[in-house]
Image (cartoon, rainbow, N blue to C red; front, side):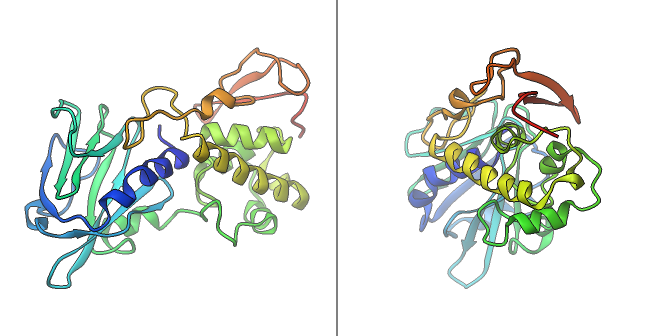
Length: 276
């Protein structure tokens, strides 16, 4: 599943090229996870603004000559990807959204159709508002501190790895990146979230930010078929310390990396370097 780094890399790969474009037509394929909620034919002529990201969602702000504003909230789902350009390949059976503009065509390819393209008057209203309302802080928000994390984790008995994946405290620490951040912070993923001390929370915030910065710089992770809007794959998966390295020696202490299942997701960690 594309996580925050992959979504941010996707945004960066086409945002500057589509900003200011005017919509010529929009074509929808098979139904996605949620309906668009708007007659897309009425968006012809609308102008695309600066593409934003909130968590794993992209927001394409739109406006028309009469001063009306709105936008399209895009989610890549489990296996979706966006492409943008003037000469895309012919439309395939897994292409379910295509927005043709005077600067190129934006296309969503989603084999499993868990993604979505949803209209909203703003990011705070309608269906987009409901989907975004429960999200935690962005990972690079100045309000995300060790003290904030410690306060939000108080009383939580769930394992820290699972607490990070919920996304109601901080967004972006998806499965790969949570495993890596916890390793770098030296925290056992099975530790009850509410038992983290303030110093360990501070360290964890730093490592979450560091892992995500590195992942974005490396183009995200392409474990299966992720590509950015240029068609390029990411390379973070080549530098992981624990994720996907079950039974391989830890790069720090040589102890075999262990894999367990938490909340139906695979967790990878070093039983020596990561402490409860």
